[in-house]
Amino acid sequence: MPTEWKTPLADAQPNSTANAEIRRLQIGCWIALIANAGARAWFTRYELAPDSMSYLDIARAVASGHLGAAIHAYWSPGYPLLISAFFWAFRPNAYWEFPLVHLVNVVIFAATLACFQLFWREALQWHRRYAGVRDAEIPEGAFWALGYAVFGIATLNIITVGLVTPDLLVSAFCCLAGWSALLLRRVPSFSRSVLLGAVLALAYYAKAPFFPMGIAFILCACLWRPVSLRTMLLVGTALVTFLLVCAPFITALSLVKGRLTFGDSARVNQAFYINGVQFFRHWQGGPPGSGVPVHPTRKLNDFPEIYEFAADNMGTYPPWFDPTYWNAGITPHLRLKWQAVVFVRNLALEFQIILESGAELICVLIILALLRSYPTRWIEGLGQLWFIWAPGVIALAMFALVHVEPRFLGGWLILLSAGAVCTCLLPTDTGTRRAVWCISAAALITAASALILQASREAVGVDHAAGRSSEDVSIAVGLLSNGLHPGDHVALIGDGTGAYWAHLAGLRIVAEIPAGSASRPGLPALDFWESGSELQQKALRILGQTGARAVIVRTHHSVVDAVPSIIPARWRGIDGTGAYIYFFPANR
Image 1 (cartoon, one colour):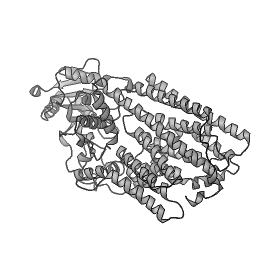
Image 2 (spheres, helix red, strand yellow):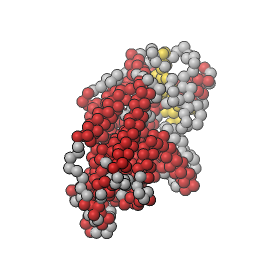
Image 3 (tube, one colour):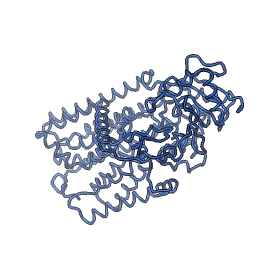
Image 4 (cartoon, helix red, strand yellow):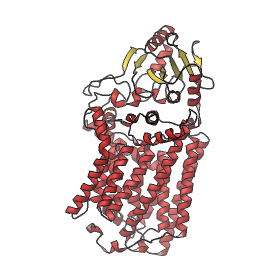
């Protein structure tokens, strides 16, 4: 037992059974949260993100028996393996594949809620131990109300079930890792050390950043004063278990890459966001000092820009299926001045995300901290309970070094909130405890209102309107009805990361004239349409020489001028959609 808990405070024991009122609160929150998640998954059932198609390609390959597709240096295997199990069991057609994936997200959400229940119960134990005196602790019902409010905002509004990415799964492992770390610290044993190491290793399979974070969790769980031989053995047991369970994937990945690696996403992102390398697709070299491409996409034309990238076993859209392959040769390097600028900007962005999503919860935490007789003791409490919130702070700092998106933060904010709530102690008078009950209930009601408001916006199409449209399905069916077949090669004018119709139809994009976007300079697609008939025919001949049977273009809200207002005569429209197809006569 750590010496900081060898005090009368450690003698306080929690009640063995929650009362009926708390059970009703928990059951009601479970029902409401899962219902909200289910409804919003349905409202956004056709919504995907740029990363989604790569995960779905991997899942489809694994479901078809190609397990090697999961050995990937950029996309972690846990999420697509889980999806592949549902693909194998249900064999969805084009109409039901995306809704099925969103059902998987609801299942993951329910599992995340169960993991949160374990973590928050363990956090309650530490809060009681820290409070020592029963009347100084936050009432149990209020503690749970705050927890469900935090959980709902973090998972349903910051991450959302509409995103087909592994971030909800990461949140589940954040809670599970937090629970196993606090359990090991409260009751140290070698079996709990093994449990922590195994949980962290499984979390690494969900997303690669858990590899460095695994070390942070182990240190938070096992290090206390004084450091003893048993402490070192507990650290060693957890670390060895963690590395042993991670070893099969790291070994396979290192053999594929020809060097030791646990994942290359950090290297590639460092080059993109810090070193100024052209984002993600069609890197042809530069800027100076960033390396030389080993096997880049092949640039076939300068105006309009045309790139070819046919490759075996590279999914629907090869440049985004494996960015580490097409960007091999990148040499990330440290630029201290720019790194500091990016770090500060990303910290400000994280603070903005937290304020925009959970300002009311921050106000509640501030009120609870100010209720203490000596508010400065709240800071002391953060020092004593550092091991609860430290993993969250480390993770946020790690993301801020390179790149931040709201979906990265959800699970880690739950850990941060737990640390803040656990350090709040109350005056022992009855009036204060009743006020805390009211404040916590207000926080829960406010969070529920925010969740319902967001669900209603998605229901009427104000937000995530694309998630209600089955146009990708219609395009896929239309292309197959017009003579294309699964496995055919096609070219694209537009954004390949949004070509979900190609995934549904089983087509392989082998060349493109890229659309303009915020991540790349120029407007090649617009250049094509404005270039005149002679240059257009030249560009189409070049695309035809790539082996593509046809070229497809589609209007899309996220790209710039992918389709003109008037389509030339030889282009055939796909009924009921904004897509058009041009067949190459020699390849039909």
